[in-house]
Image: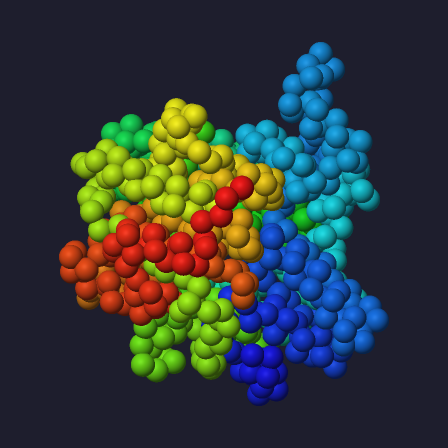
Length: 626
């Protein structure tokens, strides 16, 4: 794999490489990366989709650099602003009369320089509390706390001049935001001329690009941007016509969100439902779009000491312009939906096609880009066929490298069990499905005496199962854990390892979690992770496909399923069971995708007979006693 990457760099090509669990993927790209950096004196950019992997790469660099004889390797880990504490915000929140509240205690620790990042908080912190103190609208050079701010320091380092930084490790969100800024001609976030770009966990790139290019608008937020633009422009020209123009745009905004509120009241069944927005052709949005263009042009020619403030307002105003154009029908290339979270209506727009954006900004031949992950491929005879779904989704241009399989002995160390008697899941029979799946799950957890990670694709299912397990109390012979809010799960993983119990999880636990040894002896997939057909992105992708199930929903489900099942075997000595509580995968169901799933997953021993599974667990001594 290292040689493939070096070859791609030498010939100025991009490369896509699937690297199975356990081959040493990060070593494979860091070794040529170190040599390339030493030769060129230009930084290597590595983008991941998890903080855990970013931190691990940071540590691996030290190990590999030392082994290869590089005395100093200068690297920085760049995280999203939401991971950093903001002392400017914290300072305004302290209330002496409420000193013992969780928020006040957190504020005090931030102001005492005990906490710089969310990861510094042992045991984690609830999203609702952290959102009050994290970095949001940074003042950058104008903040009195900048000299002690980890976020400000990180932003300076990732945008270092060539020769000042060797490795820049960022999350994919930050890389994508940088690509967007460079495309728009705005000031870059990350060093301009990298020697090489490596994107790890590249199976997530499409979703990350969509998220980054999805613009969200609330009534209050939109009004605030318009007021900021007025303040900046009026300070320069004192033109009273500006006040009338901004008031007109505020009135339009009010009408837009009145209609969105009515749509949500009528169509949304629960919080976070994404609904279609009614046509707004009767509103004067075209005139509003023209006024927005005039204001944006005025902002673009301004220059002052508050340059970053102008840049931020300029960028936000461009977003509102895109919203007006999309709602008025002037711009047909967006998906539009409304949702409501935390009691506030939100309007979202997202480009329909992201592949063209990546072609022009990432795969343009200026810098070699390496895409890698343990789960990139589907079934197929040729490499082109195996990489096709991901390559087409990303607009990828470049070479496909030979897949590097996992060295682990799945044939002898694992068995896959499919529960054939559980009813199919749908909204009408959810209760019957949950009852049968719960009973089967408990039986399976008893078989391995706990030591089980249960992966859910719906938070509602996880919540219902957790509540029932807690209600069962003393009748459950193993400890029950559930994932925590926030991105760091180190605390709950340590508790799980200590108790040898059962961990209920969704979201972040499908990938990037590494639990080696007998502490984890079983992974249960509660339900096949198909995307929701009504989600705007998948509804659009399905509308373009001749066979939506075959071309969109099954390939997407397989990428996620492979990530989840990859949590089971993490070392050469691991043994374990993969159990799937979804009878659509059983032989009797006769689903077309069964064969594709079985061929794509590495498990060769597959059974639907619980007694066969029991014999395997006994023979391999997977059932441990505390």
